[in-house]
Image (spheres, rainbow, N blue to C red):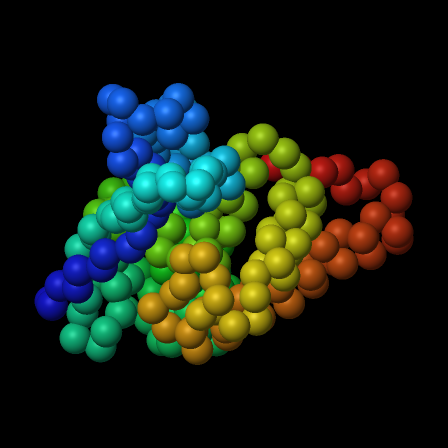
Length: 216
């Protein structure tokens, strides 16, 4: 297998020009870090002020990068995706999965697919770096987390909203994909499939009111 190194900007670090002797306004931000997808205790880039803060301000920001190494098989797919046929931007029947399990995309998109592995296989190994590969993958990761807290209908609707909020041009995403074509095709397929899922519940509840209860 060949390896591919990816360096992505995950946030910015604020640097004051004179942290010890500068103005209080600038000094308070010195070496603060802001992230596109902040974890617990981290600041978001939405909270980051934009320099200059005042006339003659010389503060600036520097990018925070994350380097990941993913192994690829000879056909170019990520090393944690074994076998399968590519269609609709994702892989079908990969890692011993059945056709009815549907396609997977990157590390988090797909039925029973989380962190680059099939969750039904306790011995399966996923991606070495489980962080989402792009904004589409991040939406799928959030969908998995949602299932831990809310019912499936709410989470499926949220996923549809999040996918639809992404630009139709993946190159414009905050965290763009490696393959624009694959991301475009899978996003379109996922929106369609989850809309069918939501509509199916609505139909069953209309025909059999009270019979089907929300589930996680």
